[in-house]
Length: 256
Length: 317
Image (cartoon, rainbow over the protein chains, first blue to last red):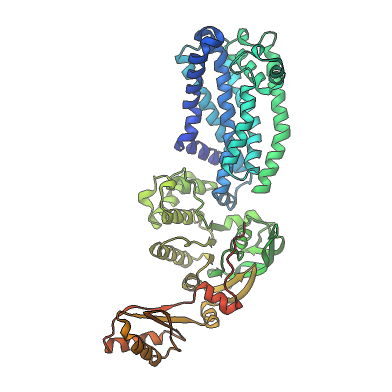
């Protein structure tokens, strides 16, 4: 079971390198987002780009991971449509191995995306302002969140008729979650009704926690505490997994 | 002889469509069963049940003595499946596709690579082995898919319309590979829409229509039931037609028809008429552009078995 999962995870990673679209998602896209937000909006939002970078870079990492974690549904749907899953199912392997293989493969994709964003950030002047183990914690926390969120995408991937529909539905979910948060601007600048949503949006708490861990408490929203934000994220993960893991595996078993 | 595949009373319904209405299939060890039927007859559904991909609504099926529902893992160790559409991973190379499947079949990486190279060689894909499968032609994909299903040296191979959409030369290649498979001892269940294909490869033929078996026989027996072969002649010069008609009757055919302005065709009981006609045409120096013995098409088979043309409705399976 573990060996089969790893073989299929390797497949996910190999495919990513072969498929320019998916490789761009984790390589070029975070760089473009960073350039766009730091140099174009940075001056307007924070006065100058140097003080915006530590604020926005953790947000860009979170946004990139959000998009990456939702491609799993598209990939699984494509595999089913193309008959690749029929082949897997006719082999004497655990039924769950293709699913877990895709999840494990995605962790590699996430790691690459985080590495690229932090690496490019370093080139344009980003420096960790916290202990090294805070940075490690940040990476683990965002990957944990991505793995918890991916079950939403798996569920959509199993229920939707085409991979195009999966993509459309996924974007519908990702956009309000990432833009309706404090990713790019401090929440205090938003209208009241939007602040209400932002304060309960789990992505906001992921971003605040990432800022606290990578850039230091000075870049977090006033009045928030790092421990509090991390606990919020862990609680969101428990809820996401508690609700969507059973639904996603039910839909997967029904299809597989 | 041992029964390798045995299915009794399989039924399967998809919504309003009764895909299988109770079919029996039996395949002896080391033989080829051809399952012949039009689109929507239930061929693919039957294969998917025997390959453990679908559960039947009722009925039982065993492969090498193992139940396809309750002992599916044992069944999967013994089968290889080649689908109607080639289910290869397009973003992997030919060799990566095969090695991955070998590894999933518990071969070591070294063993998997060795077996993959062997099959790529056998299927004439060695030169293309490091290219992505998405760059392959239809025939190459089909061969890679077939190779993938043989990675684990399965005792039972399901070939679901293995030649649909291939040009005649590629089709002959696939036929050759299937014959090799049988000489190596595999038991094969082949679905097809062509009597010609079933006749060329199968020991037994089961004809299905609307999810039911409507005939089961050897190719010889089936051809006898559906009226055997048709002799077709097209002389170069259409003015020879009356003389050709006389020669055909003399060679022992039944009354010829004229399906096209320059062509005659007549049912024959065996191929001796062809030899006799060739000799007669040669002695009278009549040249022909076409002279062939043709098996009945699927439509003709269905017409003679059911009195109706073959159904052609798609069933979502």
